[in-house]
Amino acid sequence: MAILTKKVRGTEDVLPKDSYRWQFVEDIMRKESSAFGYKEIRTPVFEHTKLFSRGVGETTDVVQKEMYTFDTKGGESITLRPEGTAGAARALLEHAIYNDGLPVKASYFVSCYRYEKPQAGRLREFHQFGLECYGTSNPAADAELICAAKSIFDRLQVKNLRLELNSIGCPECRKKYHEALKEYFETYKGELCETCLGRLDRNPMRILDCKSPVCSKIADNAPKVLDFLCDECADHFEKVKAFLDKAQVEYVVNPTIVRGLDYYTKTVFEFVSTDIGAQATVCGGGRYDGLIEELGGQHMPSLGFALGIERLLMLLDAQGIEIEKPATCDIYFASMGENAQAKAFELTQLVRSASLYAECDVVGRGLRAQMKYADKIGAKFSIVIGDNEIEENKAKLKDMESGEQRDITLGDEFLTQFYDALFDKQNPDGLKI
Ligand code: ATP
Ligand code: MG
View 1 (tube, helix red, strand yellow):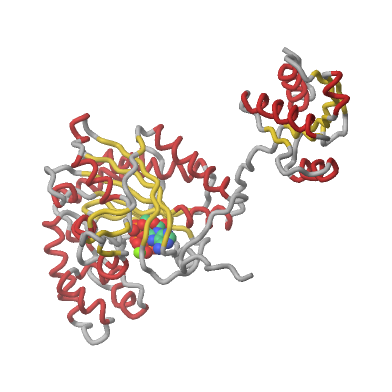
View 2 (cartoon, protein in one colour):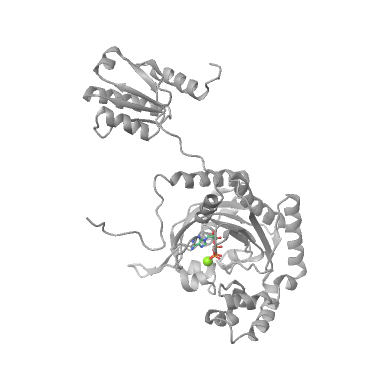
């Protein structure tokens, strides 16, 4: 029979056999970001469309081409979040979280939705881990945020990741820079792609981000934003770099990074790898001093980054980085007959109550098939329970690897005796305590 339907183009399933890889990186993200003082925020998968059109920026590709927007039955325009920052900022304002003291440091795991052309490292549903830090304009915060991202990559032992850094200044510097860019790109009007022609008036900086080879070649010689920074922005950038030097974080200044979202000011950065093909940016972020005001709040300089989890996993794969496999089953209780199955069930629950991993037959298989299954799930120990064992309240505990057997009581003493066996197995030369 043919299956009813397959997954939607640009989406992926994470299967039970692979989910440990996600959990492994997510655990590290949680631990590292906690060490930097971040607490998790969870926001809805959809928001009012205007949050993104305003928060992400009308002139961005995300808003112009990539959003999943629909009208509800009630006639409201709703959008599946294309990124995590706007929702977190909305929640900050709605719950006045800033009253709890500044800076507010929030982390998030989100699924994101963008109608893009699916390819390696580019999906229509993808996942991000991100950090948001609200209420500080100090350059130490920029460096601290970058250090937090770096600590995740370090903990994962990722190699050859380049940190590219730039400053795109404040709206004042940007005004002058836009004029210079416009003047420069006007001379190439005949060669620019159609999208970039549109960008010329509205937001010429976007042209620097164009993926078309012609536009990007023209963009190579465009004026550089760093030459247009006002004194304050230039000083801020110098201090960010000085803090990074202090933390011994290596970076390269790349004056062409502008980032894909409109809300950025001053610091922008990307972690880039050459090991995962064309979609090389694993993590991108920066400062967005105007965003909170844009969403109706007070002036609240803020910053953050988003890290693409699929791209990170691709990178770990490409670099052959080992991911801790999930724990295998501690003990499998095989049984023969109904009474024995009931006893196995009871003992399995007992072992689980001690937070150990135990299994018994819940399929109704014969003994041979049960033992085959115990092997398949990599059980460390097994016990076969039949009428005799129940009568004597005793059974043989078998080490599945060595084949060694020892007697074990099935009553109150069971857990203590099983702990002993586990301890001996895990510490073959260890002293008994
Ligand atoms: P790109 O230039 O690759 O399109 P972007 O500038 O649109 O990236 P951001 O909006 O800053 O990316 O998102 C942060 C991170 O999320 C990216 O660095 C990337 O790792 C990941 N990401 C973005 N879009 C996708 C996608 N369509 N599929 C998978 N991961 C993505
Ligand atoms: Mg993009």
